[in-house]
Amino acid sequence: MAEGKIKIKLVGSPICTPEKQKAIVRALGLKKMNRVVERPDRPEFRGMVNKVPHLLQIVEEG
Image 1 (cartoon, rainbow, N blue to C red):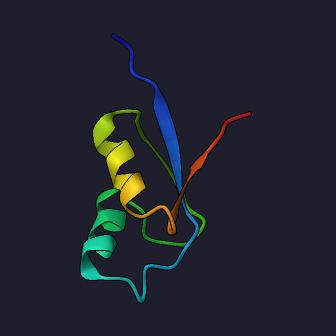
Image 2: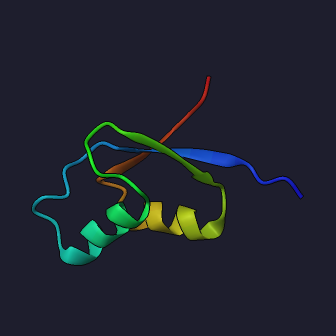
């Protein structure tokens, strides 16, 4: 079964956020602002994005 990919972009600074939110951003592989990473479209990664929607954005291809 082929899985899709989602592109996640860091749009907000995690500087003044709780340590749990910083850990989520780092676990996704995001270190700098406006960087985009590609991850498998699975519930684990969707849940991580949903925990910090004010910091992350899912980039639509098109």
